[in-house]
Image (cartoon, rainbow, N blue to C red; front, top):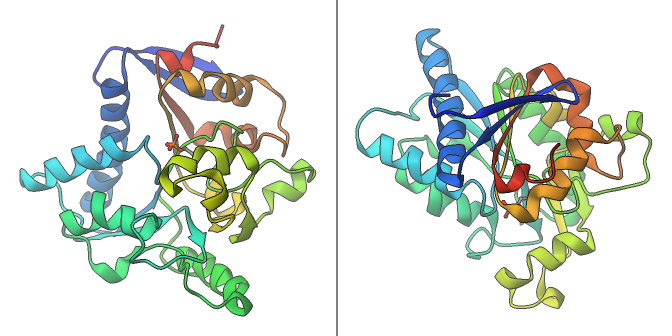
Length: 266
Ligand code: PGA
């Protein structure tokens, strides 16, 4: 990470605090590019876990820019996205398939059949089988080299929402169909034209496959993330705040924050 930043260590995890959102985004871009470079040198495919939402948009914009400049290829990359609303058509502009198409897949040289997003059109009777197949495909692809994460205001990662499970139970959660938490629905209200219009369920990668990634970058930007960030880094592990569970794999997790998102850290 080239730009000057503050380094902290909290919950056993590396935390890098950058002066502003742009510097933090660029640090996440650098960590992704390092994964792609390492895979290229080793002549193997890079397997990336990707996230949606407003936080990673500048990251994708930078990746697209570098691809256009001829310095970055996705020809030997496969991707697995964290989540998708359910049910939803991939043609729906609010679907995460459509988001990924707009922000990345249509703009780079990734093979269409290697850009995986959970399928919001699978019949409900087959949703569990589809989710299990998603986890099997990640494993068959060699496992995730890298997982990009964001944090919800309620501490969710992917759509693994707060729950009263034990830590051991939460850590075993596979990819599955879930109900969205009220805070998540409130945060999606603008996109859907009101909280009551938010699709209330989603398919999400489980905590187990997320935490199995060989490296994990949590990117959090903005003062509205300061509280969940501080709690996730300093509270004991609990399924009530899923991001605390990153502490269970602390040595492979890096938090990349801008100063406002780090505002509640001592
Ligand atoms: P955001 O979403 O990037 O849109 O804030 C993050 C999340 O809910 O995981």
